[in-house]
Image (cartoon, rainbow, N blue to C red; front, side, top):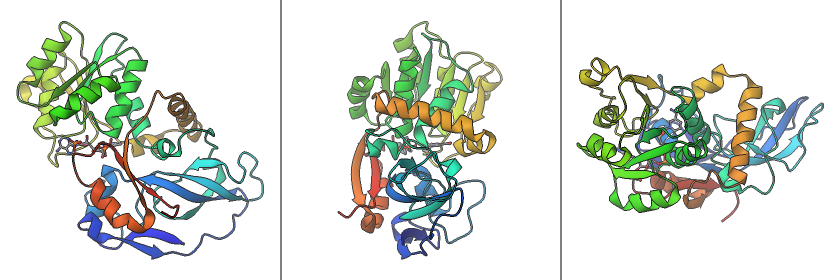
Length: 329
Ligand SMILES: NC(=O)c1ccc[n+]([C@@H]2O[C@H](COP(=O)([O-])OP(=O)(O)OC[C@H]3O[C@@H](n4cnc5c(N)ncnc54)[C@H](OP(=O)(O)O)[C@@H]3O)[C@@H](O)[C@H]2O)c1
């Protein structure tokens, strides 16, 4: 069975390799076998290949990947809620392999007729945006939320989920050519990051309340968002795309009571009952089905071109996610 594997950390496209791994065999009682179809390459995967992800780097070798979509190939005795051919989320971590055996109870059939490319990206970015909007401050309808890296997968989900909840979003990017497309996508305001960001944000939102900022960048970008939120507001940091530690000045934390919090989806998965997790995925899959949620895809590579796919995913300036397919192509 074909799988991607990394045996030493380093430059992502150099360390990723394709290997043959043992087939997982037949499903035992309560188990299911899933054939992988598609997976995205996320920034966390790139960091993982570099050895920079998580509190402690994993023991090598590993098969990377935290999400994707596939079809049930076989079910074991006692499994009645799944049938062969059902499309399911790939159980992770380690999704960059052709076939996997899983406890069937951790799987559920996804709605048919939903674009599999979107389903392949359901597990990580949509719940991240959904939970960050609700679990820290829960802004009220009519209030504003601000985010940076707003053209990312998470950013696109957050724009649409905020709008659906009656919130308004200020969306910060690092490239001016993204402003118009983001507004067309549903952003109420879109601005290029810079030292006077807070003044430009206030010019956009007037006296509107802005209690929540969502930061994927870290470094000085965290401080620029912290300056934008109201007194007593919260900055939720969930990524460090700049590679720098978050900075928030004392004039925000001490004199304006602005808080900095962190969010990690994997921690939420570990702390949340499986039925609540499945309910959230059903809710978000329905939003994919009705078009509320949609993330652009820039390219799909066949698995045999995994090195090119990883190199492409690691580059900035993309117009969407990079997906990898197990279909021949
Ligand atoms: N904590 C969690 O549980 C969790 C869950 C999901 C995602 N994340 C994190 O969320 C972030 C976004 O993930 P994604 O999958 O949505 O990303 P994505 O779709 O792959 O897009 C990457 C984005 O990062 C931007 N970017 C890269 N380097 C940057 C920098 N130095 N300064 C500003 N922007 C930069 C890119 O902007 P350009 O287009 O201009 O290059 C692009 O918008 C990542 O850091 C990821 O690790 C965290």
